[in-house]
Amino acid sequence: MVKPYLALIALALCACATQEIDTSAPRPNIVIVYTDDQGWQDVGVYGAVDFSTPNLDRLASEGVRFTDFYVSQPVCSASRASLLTGCYANRLDIHGALNPNSENGLKPSEVTIAELCKQRGYATAHYGKWHLGNREEFLPTRQGFDTFEGIPYSNDMWPKHPESPKAYPPLPYLMDEAIVRHTPDQSQFTTDFTHLTTKFMRKSHAAGTPFFVYLAHPMPHVPLYVSDKFAGSSKQGLYGDVIQEIDWSVGEIMKTLNELNIADSTLVVFCSDNGPWLSYGNHAGAVANLREGKGTTFEGGIRVPFIARYPEKIKANSVCSEPAMTIDVLPTIANLIGAELPAHKIDGKDIWPLLSGDARAISPHDAYFFYYRTNELQAMRAGKWKLHFPHNYRSLEDRAPGNDGTPSKYNYSMRTGVELYDLENDISESTNIVDDHPKVLADLLKLADKMRADLGDSLLKLDGPGVR
Image (cartoon, rainbow, N blue to C red):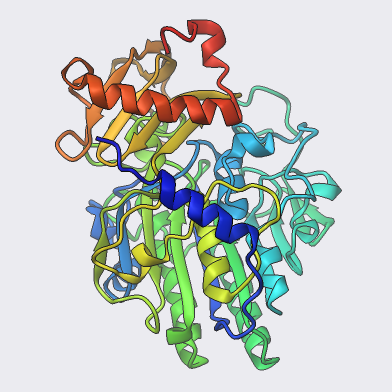
């Protein structure tokens, strides 16, 4: 049966409508480290093979690790939009991955985590990859960030990409809203963005100001680059070297927080934007026994590593197996720091009881919904149940991955039916049990129809409402 949360959710929505800023709430520093295309397995505590992540493993031992954490879509821009706004990306008209020629982006009217933090007097910064619109009105400095340095979209959106669909311009590098150079040295990305982050933390702390830093590493998105100090450092190869440098980055952040004596009063969050780009083979991450990867709504595409540390509030060495999603980060932070939620509707909910280690805590959602492409509701999760609706998806031809930066081909003609999986007993989504659970199917379809009434579903135009 689907969990009966509707009454609780209604109460929560009423409470949000009348929420006022709690000026007595603590103002912890906040650091979000968001990686690009890092697989669910690609951290030591999640089962990484042939490379090590001692700093991330330490972060998990000193905080909480989620086993069933999701992004709303398995693609860059949509995933980032949901993280920063607490909304399904479809609500924001952000789909897939924006490219250098895209005319749209995250609208200035949306409210980001940075803007919530500004309510409470935070200094805010974003370093790394933005990918929510490269026109001036869409840049981070128009979305609550005091400063930004990095790239406006993915690091492969340049003329050197082996399968670029268009003649992309040279990759620009921005400081705030100005392009300061083109085709930057990507081997220095992880190091440089880390140093910018720690410098900003030191400066903010010296000024007596709480800070929010959003460090969105362009790696390990292809093309892979690593600095000389980590080149050849792992048994896995270049991909492992890149992850070990990202782990070093987390270590540098924690070292700085400890030197400033604010590590215990800082919320540090680590997550990935979606699963690995499997067609790149040894230049892609791993998902253990999850099915498929980036670009699909199977578990390998949407389930990602998530670790949070805040010793003053989060129990050490905690593991949470309740489902949660990036849409929940904004409302959770708002509650934590006493900021007012956006006046408009958002989709995320406060998951602080899950983060803090409350053994009785359960997900505040009836279900999570996974969209892909323009507005296709392809799958949903409620409790242990995962339901797929009929849709096309991509899978590797002959399961043969690419090698050393050259991708293999996908088969785009794969198609699901109405498929139900019990993720507690079938994490690989291998056995469709939809015919065995008609009541579960009926309950899930009701929840899906409520979401369709809110956000729509272009798949129904293809399949008809009687098929789903």
